[in-house]
Length: 328
Image 1 (cartoon, rainbow, N blue to C red):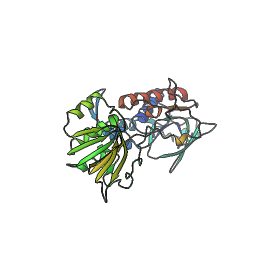
Image 2: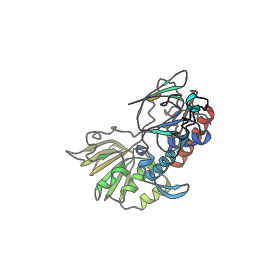
Image 3: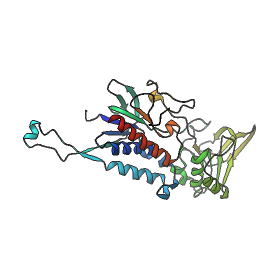
Image 4: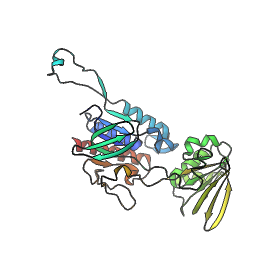
């Protein structure tokens, strides 16, 4: 195996992908593993407070990711060269040289192709060969689906309430989204903003009851359901949001808009690999997280798993164990 190649490539460096790498390592410590992606740009890193995560009553998503990154950084292996080699006989053994077993590659994967030996993975600056792959790329943000969103990005429009919420201290803001993502964002903004309006595109705001109770208890948060045709307006910065509810047009004055919508998994990297998906475009897997393509596994929200950190973490770990079994 060449130095740049690996046994297992994990596409996605969030909580799912990093857990998959750890699971594979513990199942077979001799595997060389590469994890592609940006841990601190993951969904978990942007979630703010996570409650009732096993072992913690409360933990910040960024701290959780940092802890898992630190964990993966500890895995090394001593390089044991062939003692029958001539240089070894001459006493040049490099027995104490450390090699990273789990290597994080801070690059975006641009293409994946199947070969007779496994898979070719291309990034912006390298090419890597792998014997097996775990797809853990999650669900991306649904960006630029709202009129005015792109034009006013960084001028009051943000895609991460946790990242940018403190910039809107004392302001009126709105969140476009649904579920726990929007609920957590609103609860985080509660510490900074004067008024928060959640514009939900669905007929129900579907979040955990604990989040819902806190939102109802808050005097700052209002939820509007069945919102359609959203338009963000402003001359130089965000000034207002216009939308429709049951054919009635409404406008609210705001200083900031947080778009917290999730898209379907982006599977363009794998379009030439004929991986089976369901009617919602999530990857199909069996009980071992294996896809229809030998050597390709999938874990987390990319296969439609619930977006709960402990759930996708466990799913990633299981996929890593099963991928290691396949390679072994």
